[in-house]
Image 1 (cartoon, rainbow over the protein chains, first blue to last red):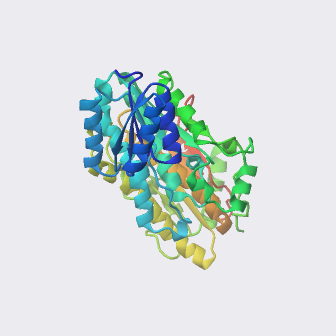
Image 2: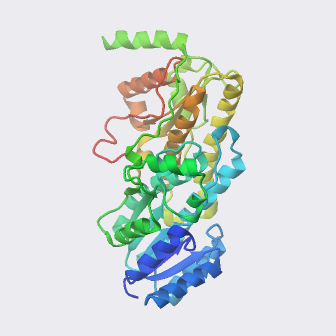
Image 3: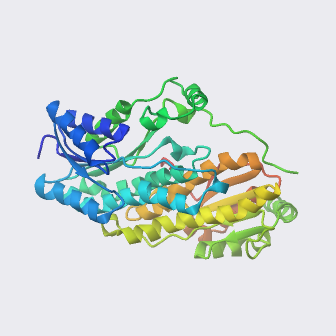
Length: 254
Length: 198
């Protein structure tokens, strides 16, 4: 086994994915950096190597069975196994329910839910042969419900629901399955929020600050080694999940 | 005492539930329709429907290593898309007409909690629970309530007391004057006791 084993991170070119990959590499995993943007993950691969870690950048389209199979073959035949799978690839696209095209809903489900589940199904055999490991699904605080987030929240709630059952199914193989539910994390995506939305969001957080990708990465590194923790959701949201979502208007009619 | 209370609820429900329909063609949907036929006056959803009980059908259990992309699309994607479609078909006319509405989604408790070898059902249930949370936040401003009832379906059919409890929950949540929204109500004989809920 290479160091602590091989870790595959999907969506590794994104702000959170990059931080996860860098942290796992620092923890002596060999990190397979999967992303549609091969150029971006190649840069991260170089950064990891420069820092003394080991990594392999690959182009990965999580919605393509062929692309997923190619990456799994790489892990199996070239790297000797797979110990950690981090499903981080995702898309944020949404609308109010009454205006939401079903095609949008379907696309978000395909990328955020169906594809990660397919990747899990396709990697279980390799993870078993590798002696077990950890599956970590990056869900979202939207799992608890967020105004205007039907598609995204449903996809992330689906990940949470599946992870509970998968944890029960795969525990006997030494494979843990957990979710992390990040809230407001500083990324390129969150930087585009209107200032008023950003201010209101920060004000709703107990810690009064945005999370950093490194906060998520630290949690992933923990779960990658926490072999007695499975089927859980770890909210990383600065206390937003214990605050008040509040949309108050009367619902009853006489 | 209990019987008297129950009778009162039934009497009230007949007067205070507007044009309710049940959506779904699986065995659970049929069982619920049989359990409380007078609650559902609308045989099909129509533009008059203002209260709906949505009962998705779940695919048979299949262990994760046996999944294919096509299976996942059918077992996970299709039921979730169906539920969204059903919700939209009810709420869009209500919103356009400025009318209140009541939506109750029924899920099987065991699958919602998580069952080994049945993660596709877990995905559907988890997705619907999250969907209902968001919908309750969004639709509150439109006076449309959204709730989920997780029911221990086996016990429901075998134990009259649980069937009665389910019927009582539906009566309360579908009422025109209900203000309860965003809730997940477990109607079981203890299936979820001692377990972290999803």
